[in-house]
Length: 357
Image (tube, rainbow, N blue to C red; front, side, top):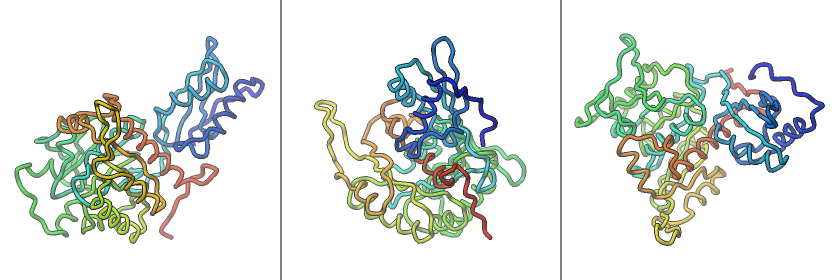
């Protein structure tokens, strides 16, 4: 999958032990360990072992965790470098995975979550695009600091995506002035969304993150029935009302046989700056209970944090600044990428390709 690997010296006991330790390593990101074919090279230079890994999903920052694990296990100086090398098989045009970010109701931080997940996947080594599917209330231009910007045309039918922070992005907000209301019936909005998706030159992408409108209407059905999405991530808050609406979103995706990748509970708690305690302002354990009820993972419990609001309002890149709050999005992105790989490959790492036959 990743080309010819370096020939490992089977005589070196440390090298053999490194391979064994990586094979046996287990975590939420690596539930089946690190396969030998992912190990690109192991070599020793200046009394330091260097391990190079090509991962078939986006989780570059796991290299520091693996470094600590190997050093503690072997009592040797070790560096680990990870390169994301996703498989070239595409499900839609030249897009590897389409991920729908959805919520049952508005105001739960879905768009902010979508953008930060996209930025996190990019930071982990993936090629990422963002499609703003909220025709009536597009938020992506504001969150990426692109309000007032307009895309250029590649030709008479195709638009070039806007680019920011290494993300390719398209939104009706780039085409309709922010002060103008988009007054369309459902079929018109669905057609507009289809055009944004199909008439944008996305190029090659590992992930297209789709910021869905809240609810379970025409646009949601269009995206789930006509587009080969890999799965959906449901964003909710701990409030009973938000959880009830999230339940409806899960039911809709289940009816159209779209996998639920997991749930993200936003505004999960507030960390008191004085005592350091967690204050559950909007309820407690609601997302965890909903995820358990449907047998899907709770990807993250993201706290209510002023840095999210401040950075989002400025259209800043929360992930590149490496703020503590960004760790929630990075870990969620790693989990999503790992899960999508495992869903589409058998236990031997062979890709499962489903055809229409």
